[in-house]
Each structure stands twice: as structure tokens, then as C-alpha cells.
Length: 391
Image 1: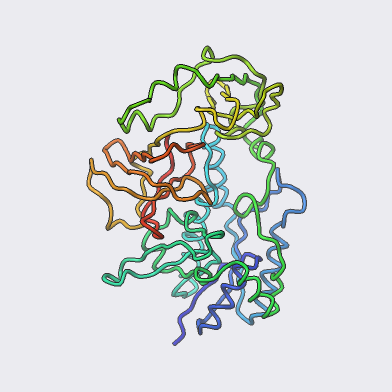
Image 2: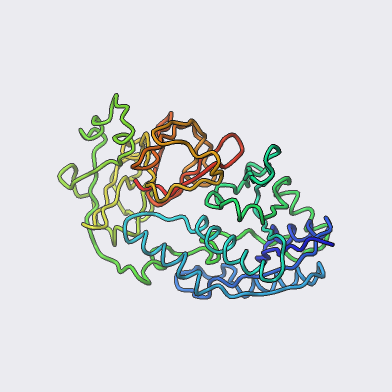
């Protein structure tokens, strides 16, 4: 009897080819389209509204001659993803909605719906791989896709073993150009469709306009911190992980007013657009935000020391193990490869586990460590764990 798999058809070329490949492998394939966002507030005109995506998904299902279903998760998506985004931005953190969308929607609600439909597996068009551990098949490994330009294992860094055991990733062993070629060869209507961009299921947005649904503009000061401020001497020649993981703390008297902003929650560390600061020899960058006092701190130049830190901390509640069997004991140190954003090259770092959290100390200082984003740690190609950056 054929194994049944429900493929999340998004209306894009990746999920279309994933469904095609699974059908060719002999699976009983059903396509399912998720309606997750209907509100167009703040979205940029012409950015693939969900009705267009649905139309393409239906055309793919007809071309492949597979059953097609739709499900509306929009209310739960708002509560689990969008409301969380507003909460994080209001607190001065920068969330990653794509990681949240995978954890909360695609591999939770979608998986539950597929199981209700009698599926053995779900499948998506992610560029990553999964395999059972040879010596213990009950353990599933999450691996990077072979197309390093498209590897999306980072976005799945919050999944757990039960989700991975029910998931298939047909594109993990092929490249994006190969996907396009397969789609053309088989006449899939999505073969030339552009990849989606922006926030998961929402699309490209004018972020301030999107956030203004709940976060009102509020003028405040931009304080420019000089590169030679004494604060940057405070961590030299230190090896205390708790000290090295603490972000730079600024007060207005450390610098001077360089301009005005429209709300601290609309900015993120490392940002240089929208500051409207002129007359500097180099561009200005956000080095810290203070949403409580509505202050943005900036530094001049991409080499400003305020942009770089040696470490970060993940709160105990936010530490997640894709491989719980590899969870270390308290007060132990492991060396892993770590990335703190999508597409960032993996960085060597020590992970120190204490009752107060996980401390990640990089061999080299990292630019733009941003609270709210996810740090994911790898052993070679395998995702071992992850956590939201607390500070």
C-alpha cells in the first residue's frame, strides 16, 4: 500500500516540484494550500496576494492530477506569529517570523491537519535533508541542503523529533537551478514564478507601516556614540561568559543628539536605512535601541565597535534541542558551528551551558547580534539545537 503524503503547495515552484518528485517516487500525494494571511495592511502592491498563490497551487494540482485541499489558518497565524511579532518589536527585539511560521504553522497546524486526513507524512519545498541515525533509526537528523546558496535548515531549527519523523524534504539533494529545470520539463505552471520574499505568508511589507497597526509612531532622540567611548574598554581581555554575552549598555550622556526618529521599535541593530543622518564621513548604523525611553543609539561606520560583540545569551526557557539525545550537562562546554541569521556563514563558537542559560562565545566578534533572532548550532551539516537570542 502506498504511503500517503500531504504536500504544502504554496503556489511556488519549490513546493510544486516537491509534489512532483514524491509522486514519481510512488507516494500517494495530496496537495494542501494554507490560507494564513488575508490582511493587506502595510504590504507592498503587487506582491503575490494569497489568492494568486491559491490559483497557482490549484493549477499545479490539476497538472499533477492529485487531490487538492485548502485550509484557513489565518486566525491562528495571527495569534501565534503576528501577535508575537508585535510583542517582540514593542519590547525592542527583532523576531524571525519565518522560524516561527515553521514551528507554529507548517510543522504544527499543517501536520495536525495532514494526520487528520490520514497522511503518513507531510512534505515541503525546503532545501534541507533529514535522515535517520543509522545506529538508532528512532532518532532523526536535520541536515543542510546540498545547495548551499539555498540551504534552509536554519529556518527549521526549532523543530522537534516528532515533527521531523513525519516530514519529507524532496529538494534536499538537488539545487535550485535543477528545480527550475524539472518544473519546465514537466510543464508546471509555476516554473517561471519568482520566489516569494518578505515575511512568511505575508510577503514584502513596509515594516513601519505594518507595525503601525499596533505600534504608534513616537518621536525620540537619536544619540550618536563615538567609536572611542570608554564603554568599549570594559570587556577587553575578559573571559567571563556572562560579561562577554552582555550587550553594550548606553546612556544619553555617552554621546550627542544626531537627529530624531519616529519610534524606537521600528529600528533594529545594524540598520542604516531610515535614520536621515547626514554630514558624516561614513554611514551611520543602529547599535542599540531603548524602547522604554524611546532612544536609538547609533555609531558612524561599519567598523564601529558597537556593532560587534563576542557573545550572546539564550534564556533557559528558549533553549531548544533538535537532537535532545545530545543535550549536555550543566556547566559544560561544547564547540559548535553557529549562525545567528539566515545565509550567514557558520561561525565557530563555544556553547557554555549554565543554570542561567546558554552562553555562546564566538572565536571572532560577530556583527549585529540582535535580540529576538535565533541562534542555531550545527555539528558539521547537522542542526543540533537553537534558541532565541535573549541578549
